[in-house]
Length: 118
Length: 341
Image (cartoon, rainbow over all chains, first blue to last red; front, side, top):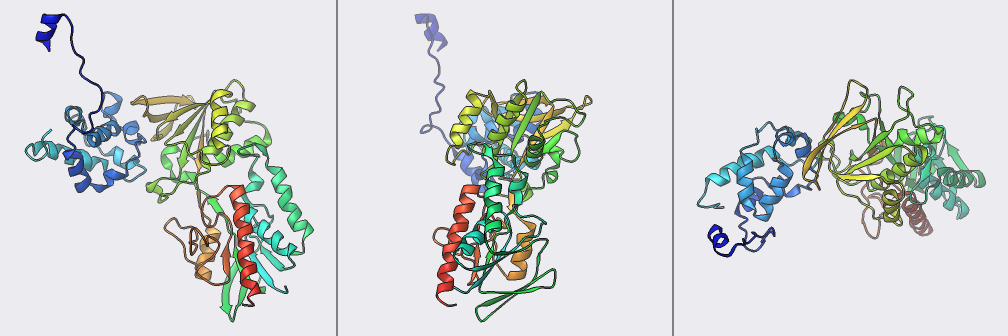
């Protein structure tokens, strides 16, 4: 891209669209399988409201779970390490989602890079 | 038809059933645990969606008892229950034994006990109240804080005790959203300088004219709607409340200082209903409300022949639905009685 810019004096914006067909949702499948309570999330944001990390960084568990489900995994990977695993989100969740375990499992999933490659 | 029917519960459903049956010449005994009939409606100021005075519906119900030959037993509960040869024998707490051909259970609902959601501080913080408390303030006509001051910012939290696995209530109480909208408008009416914020997970405006009321709240009354489940409230040193919520549509956590917080308490199977279920051997569902034999074609019929349900003892319902359900129960009872059972 940078070379194009030099050549033509313009750049191409990367699309913001979620390319649902092209995205790989293996991590979501893995998490649904290992922690089925994830299917119950209604995106209320209770987890993010109570999250200590979310108050100071761009970390949002609600957003993360949506991105996992859409297969937008690059962003998920960058954010996962911000979680301190305190588990307050799990106490708050009205749908009884085991949110803390989702983070733990997502970390594992990224480690298994062959099977759950981003 | 020389028959006798016992109606358990003197709220909207019980009164409607009793009145209709009595009109048809059936002898009715109406059992009510409180000293007065009318149920929850007595505590309500105005009704959604048209915000008419609840007293209008109250007097409609009061006329039923007044105009009909109904045997009214107030301050009365049920102690024993027996079925034999198509007859029901009901023993009351006063030791009276009533003999009836059929029974209608109309034990209604209880409001969720908001103190159970400790994170919102009901019963702990000075200015956290419930939707029912607010109706009481409306009736008195003064919306004031505990210290007598007039609130300027008021937050309304939806889904308190509904759609919440942590308190064991999976279901949606379905009336709290529109109650929140109604009360938000009323607060703005009483206090034109106030700001009102509703914190919701989903706006469930499914009833007739609900969406119109929601639109009016936004357009005419400037009520703000913020999509997010409030995770906690705490009291500040200056006696205000701060809440934590994620503004999910902005994608960022939000904190806000409020003068008053109103909790939209959901509906639960009443304690009286639980007692009746135990005494009568009546089936209840996963949501603890009475379980009818058929959700579509027999929502008034219980697992025991001759015992029928009316109103919110089976599920959350608004007044319109409750009256319809009560009238449907009357059809079921008449059908049952005419067969000479």
